[in-house]
Image (spheres, helix red, strand yellow):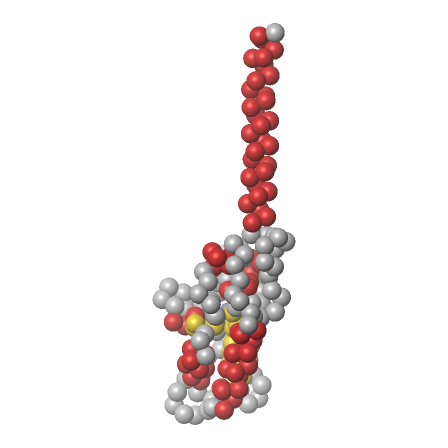
Length: 184
Ligand SMILES: [Zn+2]
């Protein structure tokens, strides 16, 4: 009888550990997944971001600058795919954020570019299409900042010139926990 206990006890401990690990894994996995029961992820821009995006396009147009919005909401999956670029896939590194780590994932960021008179997309941040001796790109960034956007071109470590975001004072960590900006 004592022998049987000696054989069974380690197995009972192993099985218990596996059960606990299984639960911990599932709990953490669910925490950041898109199907989390917390506040759902938006498929559209936050209404305030949407309104300011349109204001930005209008105000730039008054300065004879055509702004094109190249990116709005990005799913976690799309974000992870983008993160692979320049790492496990060819191309230049375009982001340092994995799925869930970008304001795009929460409908709080947009990317822009410029368009010239022939409809060509301009990525040159020195381009002066309206001929006022100022970079159109910086003119757009200035308007965006007036509207309350944070501009990726102001970041110190990685300059993301097309990127504009509104954080509403929320960190990525808070957004990952399911906290969302209020919609008024
Ligand atoms: Zn962006």
